[in-house]
Length: 203
Image 1 (tube, rainbow, N blue to C red):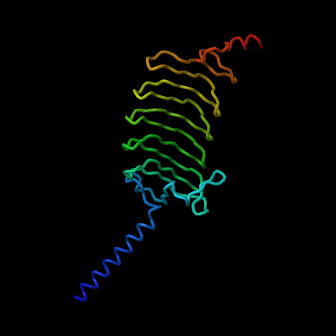
Image 2 (cartoon, rainbow, N blue to C red):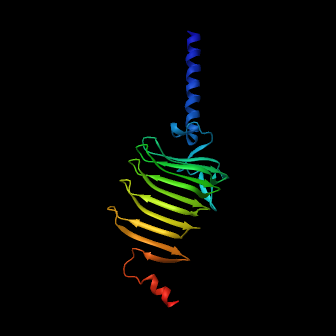
Image 3 (cartoon, rainbow, N blue to C red):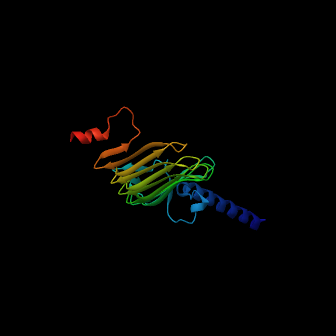
């Protein structure tokens, strides 16, 4: 009897320590089996211990290195963003509540860089943007929910540059113009505005 009592006591103590450990570690819980293999600290972005100061994310008054996440009510991951020394660093992702990937983008020292991709809830491509130093660079494209391209634009250092095009769902043209030196040439899709050629003739 004494042996059994000791065994039960040890089991209860062990269970108590396990529950206490799980409660203490809740802020660092790995939120999604798809990312369970990624090492690091996981912190829910709604926690008060996360604070933003002067463009950096702090955890317990120290620049945060780890993963900031959000969960849906069913505990599936809604958002997962990597940080290093208080700034976004690496591949950030968002999901729909059905588990479909919604967006993914890359950060380098807090700046958006490279490709930023988005999908509709049905899995079709929604947009493909390109960034350099946190600004649009190169070709930017957007598709409607049926998968048809409706916008294709070009940027340089965050400003329109080159060919800009937009279409309606039936394929008809909304806008088709070129931007050179800050000026638009062609069909801009804007009503009640004077022709860009009129400005050209005056100068």
